Image (cartoon, rainbow, N blue to C red; front, side, top):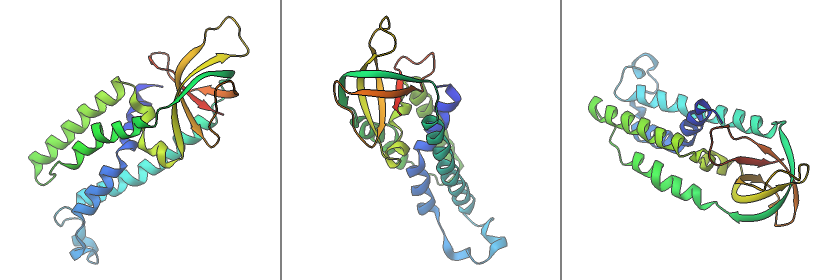
Length: 194
């Protein structure tokens, strides 16, 4: 997956942060005074968070459609599989929880928040943790570490990687069709069960 795609997934994965900031900064005193609403207090932050929430939802749907329509599929047999949904929790504690503790009142605090947000995004992209995107949980995906033996190419070694699965959970020895959505520079291949 390209770096741009990983950054998009990082931004999507922060939708709980957008929602919490939106709720925290919401001020309904000027909601009915349309002209004044945009210039009152933290309403610009509320508007930005609302737009980020909407765009996260739309980009998440586009990403899901793209990976489900991926045509570069393979046919393999699962040799080893283990549940890796714990990565969602580690992502929450490593990336999201620190962002909840930030105070976004004032320009200095907002600048610190944005800098931290950026550096955490760099870590997210560099460590290829994009598969532990919390948006995938809400799209009913599960994460598994797998070893897949390619049924079409006997010369090909067993592939080790991450498998994203919706619905039926495969077991050892089961034949599956899968799509490889990883990018050539990724150190861990990401497969999606078709």
